[in-house]
Length: 569
Image (cartoon, rainbow, N blue to C red; front, top):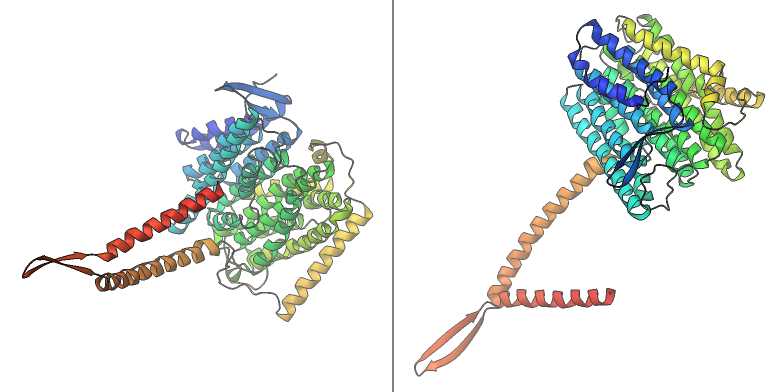
């Protein structure tokens, strides 16, 4: 039976708004049914353009299904189902509503065929997701949420401005390949870059994600940045700048993650690192590279969600995810430990785990380009680094290391079910990647399990593990300490306001000094004009030459300005 051509994202979006009206066990059944219904609707949709609307003379395509949008929408809906299961223990209605609306807006944005429809859902993801941060209900979470919302809304405004420039120049709002040379191309590129957490635009991610609730961070990890990856793949495939940007993205978070104490913030830096691999694939722009980007986004959502799920369970049971306060939890949370290790093996790209069959596609695509040898080197360095900070550090300091003495219950059953499902997918895709490869946008033959791929990756991982062991034994590895990790956002959150305050204070003192100086100057320059009015008397006329000086200076400045303007013209 053919289902109606409705955007599957609307099922989650509208269904999520009805959650407050549903009580008891029926609410949880409804939360599970929504992503299941949306999945059925997506699978039934024929490829092509649907949902045509004419608005103010513009032809809008509100629903476009092709190979690229399908694979991203599919993993978004799978993630929505896993996260609905993971959050079943929550009694907070706001989190359930925000999570469903957020996921629905992300799916709908992936299936948008024009820039106006994309903008609407783009901004809706920002508005809905911020409630997952505010649901923590702390003063810090409120401030972080405000910063997050401002940055995300600014991204949407840049997208809207770029779309306006495009429609003015071309008369079309179609969302296809854009490129930097297109009208508004740079503005849209910057909008996508903010949401994708490009270097120097990335701080909102590490600022916001660790401040969300235990379940909220899991939801946040899946959608916002991967929606930006999809948008870049759609609009800027083959843009060479993205190779440089992505290469930097893979490398710089490693150094922050190694010294970070908050393990959820470590995963946020790791998320930035993994996004870099996808951005490099988009920049290379070949069919193999774009397939690698789509596959890696698919796998990344699963294993990153699994890692955030395990840390969310620790936060729920222990009340902290600081590495300096954890250790020995494998005794209390054995199943969570196993699932965390599976997620760590997946993100580290161990053979037979999902990260291996996707990450190797991007590295192979870079290796096929003779002039990108330096990119291959950086990607290999980044692969070793992610094994350090996510593959080893997360499970080691949370569940092993020294025994912190903390004893708690195992994670709730619904959390364990969600983690088990994500872990099964990580292993299943790693062992048998053919179904995933069949979903990818291009038909490209690729065999991940060649002798060279497997041996190279195992060597990389073993040497990385050896380095970690030596550094731990010799005390070189940075210890887990309560500390503040200064990132580049310090420049505009602390340094810039301090400099502005200093400038204002200096300006105020300078203004006061100048006023006092002028007052003295004016008194000294008073001109007394004596005139003999009549015999025996005199008329004294006093002019404030300070006032005359003011007008003379203003006149000179005006003449100079007019001259400059004429010269410029």
